[in-house]
Image (cartoon, rainbow, N blue to C red; front, side, top):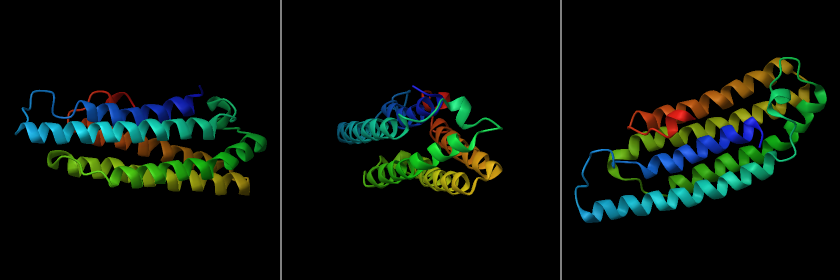
Length: 171
């Protein structure tokens, strides 16, 4: 699995696995119903993130190694290959965001959940920027797109870490 795949898998796993730890770190559930709805929410998010992770892996399966994709002297061939995968990556990010936004998070998670999901749109837009830059042969814009893509994943992890998530902090 490439570093790009591992990075995205970490973000997706962080969203889903991090949610699995939500509130279990010393905050008692207000009621059994609240705990049950939290478990249902987590299970739903886990399924969506797992499916998106599989789609993401399929989208990047034929890409060159990550080190080649983000090398400062990245070749035009590698940029073109990345440009071909970028629309699928953007589609996976947007579809996941749409599906996760359809879930109703527990009230104590809503704000951080929204912030974390906002980063999926940022990543989708960055993937489109990577595609456009690669097609134009603009190495600097291409690499800047990857930096935006990566920063958005880091921001997602931070938004969830602020809530007390540990797994997401590793993303």
